Length: 258
Image (cartoon, rainbow, N blue to C red; front, side, top):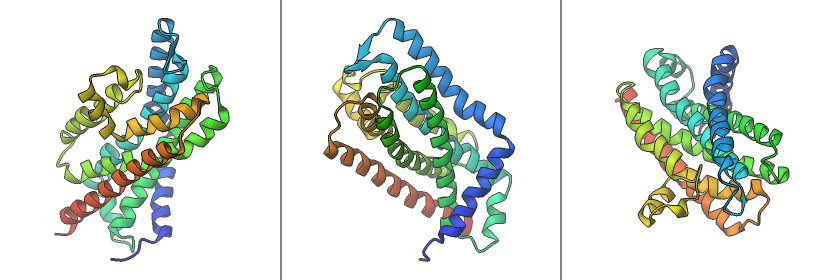
């Protein structure tokens, strides 16, 4: 197996970045405005009735959750709808693969760009949180950003796996219903998962977003963080990323070349 060339991986990422700049207004609307609307609605709506949760103000609690969700949604959308469109409808992947770029390098470039785009979305939510005074620890928030980026790679890899099996846009209704929506409602974005029945808690810990939120929420709130738990959450996310990417690469290779 050829070792991926970082130059080609970066070239794919830069290409996507240039396209992003070309359509920056609709891109920002879908990837930045939506999380901010949710943050405003729940942060100020429920915040009127809930003062604190899990040892921090509810606004801080929600901001950490929305940073994670915005990253998850942005990365997932990019490697599902976005990647499928480039692969199936526009034929861009065929054009790229006619160059020296390999499929593995192409997929790595797609994942890397999706993670960068997710980080942009997460940074937007963080900026709003800072303006509203919902981020008690700026240094902790900056330390949390690498965890957001690593988790975004995981979200992108799982999205790419879904794309590898998708035969049409209808397939992604399953992905968003059974992967994105459960993360949104069960992984601690708006409530502590300990409020759910035990079986739901176990269900929630399967999703990488639960681990991401558990890692970044105390950092953003300026609360003590256990190094071993951070290492565990990070290891889980990396393991899911590697497994998802290997499976996506294998399935996509079968579809394109067999």
